Image (cartoon, one colour):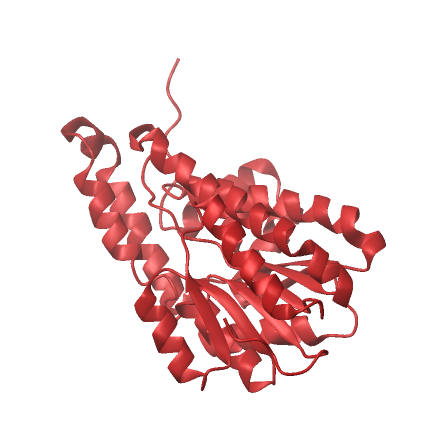
Length: 296
């Protein structure tokens, strides 16, 4: 792992930097003069980003559910920082296998929390000493799905909502150390940062029993199709990455930020609509209608 040449340099760690938004943010931070560390899912991603950044981005292939592995990686980065402190830590959530909650294996729901909650908490805790040295900033990126859970995305929505609550707790707890914690709510991103979404829907449908397929199949397909449409019309990948970098560089941090018209619309809806209105809004958002209430 390369050791920066000066004692005081600008540094950023990005958990989830191998593809999509994380990759774009890593390149943008590097172009701004930051030394960038991060995690990727594969060795191929590690080599790709090192080459694309001219060696300014150093990634490690690391599974966010492997807590000992995450800690070992974080220890290596902290050693490379050589006591200079960490300026910015960016955490990006994983998109987890969706489907009807009734049909999902408990293990797959658990993985959502292992990756998006336990993994993220482990990363934050590992880097807090370095963040304190630099009076640094944690940027927790999330989708609007954390604000408005939609059908067949329960594990991702629940784990991201948990991260939102944990971020609020961290914000209050580390404020005396002059460490900022910012949550950023984004639209679905184009080009799709989550390129495997359609494939996951196919896998989820294949795992349904015939009875479950009768209950959920058409609605699940309709919702998945609508989410693809929302991603195509979503926020621009480069623009979202640039906004993340701006938040990292800002002199004063706000506790919350939002990127994209849809994210802003959903945040407003959750704050202003009554329960029945919000439920209709939720279903309409993913192309579903209100189900008929059972008769008594």
